[in-house]
Length: 124
Image 1 (cartoon, rainbow, N blue to C red):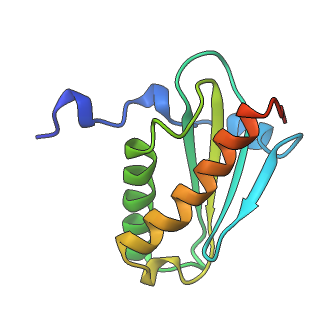
Image 2: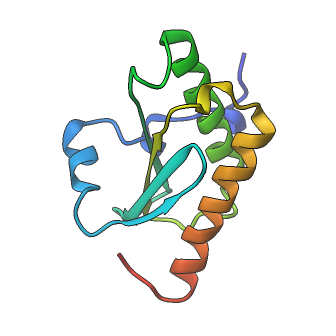
């Protein structure tokens, strides 16, 4: 059983098609080896995460594994992300073969760019 401090609540997720489509306009981007991270100012509240993993990336097991890893990095990276930001992680081919440390390194780098951009006053 997951304790309350380790959950990934619905308020921390992008869930509807409209929320994902809003990320296309005026968003900033950072490309890693196996991820494209897109972010934009969101509604007041905690940072929210959306994940897009195409069938071209892997089968169902591989896609679900990558999503679990990305959610875990996001959940543990709360100190890097400013509040009121929406983050969309688009998974690229080959990500399903990465171990947790590689996913951790790539996404932490991207999340660091988000916090650096917001700290410098850059708004998407």
